[in-house]
Amino acid sequence: MAERTYTPEITTGYTAHDLLRRRAELQPDRIALNIDDGPVITYGEWDRRSNAVARGLRDAGVGRGQVVGLVFHGLDWINYAVAYLGVLKSGATATHLNRSVGTEEIMARMNRCSAVGILHGENVVPPAAFTGLTGTVTTIAASDTSDPRIPVSVTDIADILFTSGTTGPAKGSASPHGNLTYGRGPEGFHLFGDPEPLLTPMPLGTTASATTVNFSIHTPSTLVICPIDAPERMAQLIEKFSIGSIMITPWLAMQLVYSGATERYDLSCVETVANASTALPPAIARKLLEAMPNARLNMSYAASEAVPASIGHTFDPAVPMATGRPLRGTELRIADENGDEVPAGELGEIWLRSPAPKRYYFDNPELNAKVHADRWTRTGDLGRVDETGLLFFFDRRNVAITTGGKLVSTIEVEAALYEHPAVRQAAVFGIPKGDGDQEVAAAVGLSDPRYLDELPDFVASLLSPEQIPTRWQLVDSMPRSANGKVLKHVLRDRLVAEAG
Image 1 (cartoon, rainbow, N blue to C red):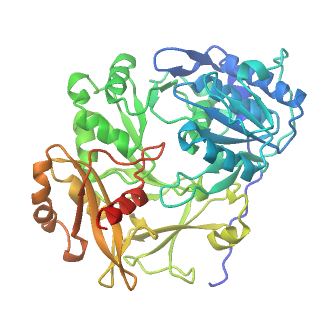
Image 2 (image 1 turned 90 degrees about the vertical axis):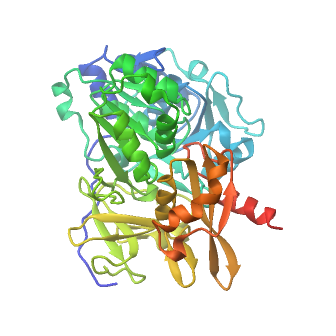
Image 3 (image 1 turned 180 degrees about the vertical axis):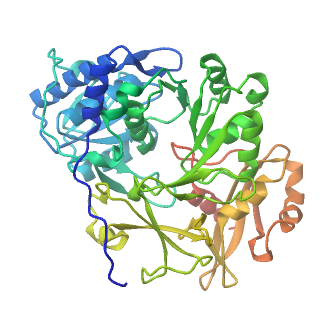
């Protein structure tokens, strides 16, 4: 790779608890989190309670840089947020664990992190095999609610964040304090007026929940949290609180548009819909905007290892498969196998870079050497840019299908499937045929199973011959991760087993 001049890492900035402290000083009575139109917490209360947790952890012997697991479930967001900021204020590092991954996986991740403690919800039982410190927010908190003022640098590790594990075993990244707060500071807090609330249905104990808590500290809006997989409740809350913005995943968007809830409630108050997690099929994007006629749909792309580097734009029906352009200090390169930039229009690997403190795999130096190069992050994703610099995401390298010597994008095939009015869920993946070649397979959930037979002819009008699935699987539901991503390896194994 040719020698280049690179942007240095930014080592000045703020931690999340710096921002919470300042927010509590300026707006102590402002509601930060509203949980499903029920429990609420103000910035002042959040600051005081997390101080008490930080002091309790220090009293229990938890030191700077030691790892504490957060195991919460359901809608226990307030205790989770208090515990998370308490861990950060103590100088320790948090790792976020969702009960749905199972006790064995929780223990495996705790052992990989050499975790010394677990903070958990009132209705969560920590793994019996764990021998370190365990407690709830209530039992661990000290009586002293003053700020312990533990010195913490923006380059100290705030979080161990695990990937969703949809394409293989979950990988853990060490995220510095300055990573999620890059480009954000308290300077503009005094300008906050009274903006409309922001709604998000995100699962606890994930990278998404950590991002959501950090976001709630610096956003001017009260964050309304609602259950996942509850489109009716989403629509109710949007109408009741005149929600101005929504953070949503493609799976939640699909549930919302197909549930009929958008026809029973007035969603015209929504001005911004932010899509994250994975690509949103254009057919779903159009249906979502029909239900929210005053909204713009912001599409985004980011790789967990490259955050806060990100790509985004407002959905444009004229270029429905476009992903966007680099945002806030992000640099983008489409690279060949040697790391050199490829010409516009040519497919290559997406590389991202930001001057913020970087995330690194905390226990895998070999993978770090492979993925991170001169502050670039090799995402393992494929894409191309047009002559104007607009990025089109193609697929993950290890998910794209090789058939007949050609590379097939599962994203493009899924987008074509969703154009059929009967398709409610779709997942495309490769089935090995030998000699490195694969067969294109599709699992689909339909409003009426009788439409299965017409799908091959339907997509043939939208796709090239090598993209058309030759293996079909009708499913009632898809196996999904905590954040709604389809576990394609489960579907692949199931289809192979059924074929004998």
